Image 1 (spheres, rainbow, N blue to C red):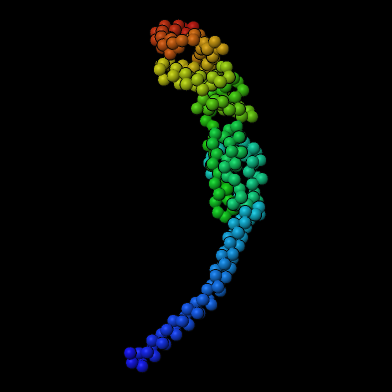
Image 2 (image 1 turned 60 degrees about the vertical axis):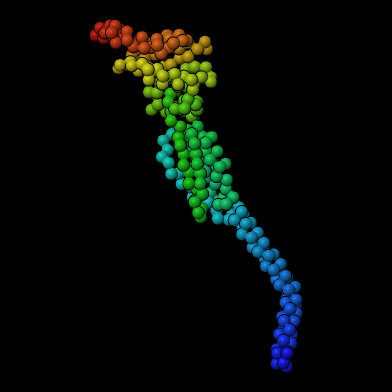
Length: 241
């Protein structure tokens, strides 16, 4: 090996040695820097997480009802919603608020969602009344009893159900069955009574009361409809005349 090559090899070896020495000196510093960076990152993350969770951070400043409301009491709804103003956007529990709203008598379902930066949007599905239950409550279209503070006069035309507790759903189903399977021309069932023995009594809007017994009620009602059209209705017309 000539002198030039030997000198170059020594220079490379010396350079590599110096590089490794610098790396060894820098390595502890780099480790310390990484640890500091990690700690600062955790601190920043903790600040970011804890900041929005403070009660006053990003407060709710408005509540918007997006669904039309006909029966739900505005005052009752206000009592639920007013305490929410000022609550933190990230802390507020929308599922809990929905459950609180659903306690109100005329509310069937409620859904609450947050809209950045400080609004709650509330969607309310009201109960759909199907009948008046035992003169002091209502039955919805699913046959479930609910009790508003008062029954509005506009609902007086609904059919009246009178029956033992726990039978509202069954009575709703039978009422639909009566109407679906029986053609009562020009007359309507306005009241249904179910006794403790499960015997049915139907009142029609022309004042007739039908004692239908416990069994085969639809068939009996069908027979009555046929007789009514041929015999009863003409006689009633003569009496009215």
